Amino acid sequence: MRVTKGARIVAGTALLALAVAACGSGASDGGGTAAGGDETPVRMEIGEPQELLNPQNTTETEGAEVLAAVFEPLVNYDENKEPVEAAAESITTTDSKVWTIKLKSGYTWHDGKPVTAADYARAWNYAANQDNAMSSSYFFGRIDGYEDVHPGEGKTPTTKEMKGLKVVDDLTLEVTLSAPFSQFKTMLGYTAFYPMPEVALGADGKITQAYGEQPIGQGLFKVDKPYKKGTDQSIDLTVYDKFPGTKPTNWKKLQFKIYTSSETAYNDLQADNLDIHDSLPASTINSAKAALGDRYFDEPDAAVGYIGVPLKYNPDFKNVDVRKAISMAIDRETITETVFSGTRSPADDFINPAIPGYRKGACTACTYNPAEAKKLYDSAGGPKSIELGYNNDGGHKEWIEAVANNLRANLGIEVTPKPFEKFQGILDALDSKEYKGLFRMGWAIDYPSAENYLTPIFGTGAIETGSNYGGYSNKEFDELVAKGDQASTPEEGLQFYQQADDILLKDLPYIPIYFYRSNFGHSTKVKNVKLNLLNQVNWAEVEKA
Image: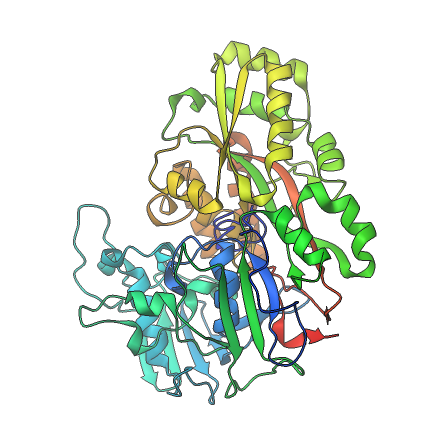
């Protein structure tokens, strides 16, 4: 999921998508205090989703959180970050190129119709087709025939179906990739790979607005009423009685409350007018530890926070020495310890320590060295003024201002922080290539693989439909990632991914600032609140207290 509430991903993400910040509206919106009887909803804060609730067009954390409650993925992930079958009965291959996905029987859409393999083929073909302009299209690029449905700008698709997707029977889908990819199964827990019911498409073959407002899923919760984006302050759901998996034991209603202020959400949490806040703002961490007690959690997280660079769209940052100087001028240690109260750690790689492939100290330009930064910046002819964009709804103001102060003091330049009211706003400005300043970005993994920190954010193919907001393109990087994809074992693939990571460390298309931790809390009304690897709540385990 491109960014977290603090990424597109975090984007997907992803995928991740797990803690670039975006949090919602103001006061409580009625319905009594949170969590109470069986019909009183459990309430969780989110920021406003960037798009309507369509899995194939959702690559940020807010919409993905909702959709994860409405759909059951093909796989989940265990404590070892390995994929385990969920809606899938089995996912097998003998060569990492041809994969057979067998679905579990018993899953039905929320309108009662059985879920079939054709529903997955429909969703994936629709997402891949460039005429449909789905933000997740790039994730299907490894399937044989993708180039036929997504030939590129200025060209027209020659078909609506990828030849690599074959519906064998009602519960079996065969997927042929254009080249072996040992981690294909790992990808399948991502939002983009959810199925799509036939009723999602209108007479013109396009997803209807009605479906985007009230998607019909096959997961634990069904959506109660259409969600009117920009108007509604909540998204309301009810447990689907025919869901074949585990259900909550003593509650049925779930409400996602949309906030434009993470601090306001925290105040509601303290007052028991909100039950779950999964991304506590930095300004509240110290008080939250004392106020919430054992209802406060600080856990490892696989996300990365960056300063993004518009390489393709602003020549001021073309010289790599300018980017290195900016990186060396940032005091990550002080920012993570002071602004984030120790709930972040200084980033020293593009791969998070929670995922195999991370190398401590890999980013030498991430070491604070203000004197060398000043000399390098001046010799490289860096710009005299810089704008630094961030979303104001995600608790980012404090650390962005700290970065701005570092750059002013250490490089002797003018730095202007530019707040966007909502996370959606800065994403839209980046998508349209309208914003050309440096920007705050975060990445929450879509699936647990080192590759997920590379391809969706920095691959050339991700400029058009992925989360490559800076427009970075490096042929050697793309080739190394491709070699990793096609390796015969995950271990061999990881070696190539690390070599691709080395290219990023040399080029610094983004500037890694910190590694996330999950800082979340819950009200006195609920218990057993846990987040999964994608930073989404395990709803079946939550109980009312």
